Image (cartoon, rainbow, N blue to C red; front, side, top):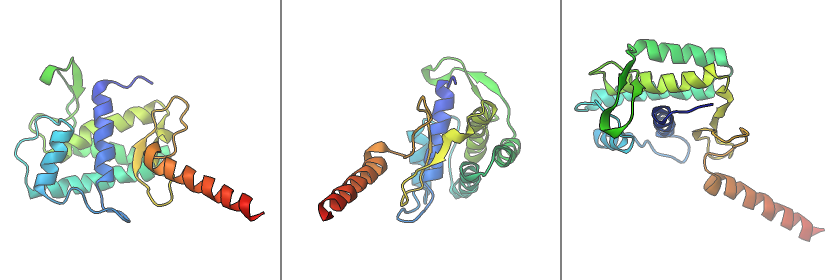
Length: 186
């Protein structure tokens, strides 16, 4: 599956957006307009304008819908949510070559709100995975105490953890210690 630069950026943004929600052991990481502005800077989002609390509230709603896509039981459920997000955003595909990037497609309308911007661009990035029959790559971490969203871009679709250095390594070390404890108990 060919993943263009702008699609990869949209995937990173949607994963970080979904993972910004409060969860067990994690605080809300988009609680203020300043944190929202930092999110926009970190993801190099263009044409966002001046952000305020209404943008923050709208983005929290879009974030919840994207979380539903990652939790969807089947493709039909994911498609329904993606279609609603993209339609509500008023998608307006257009070619652009801003900020030194080659030609690529933006799906949000000029002057769109940040929530509509992400609903359109990130929604289309997720739609490409459904169209390519790769929805199973949209996952939640397999660590029992994590549950963060990620997109498995490994060749063999075998990634199980959001980060192999943290969650994956922690579980592998715990399994190793359990085996050693069991072996010494015998």
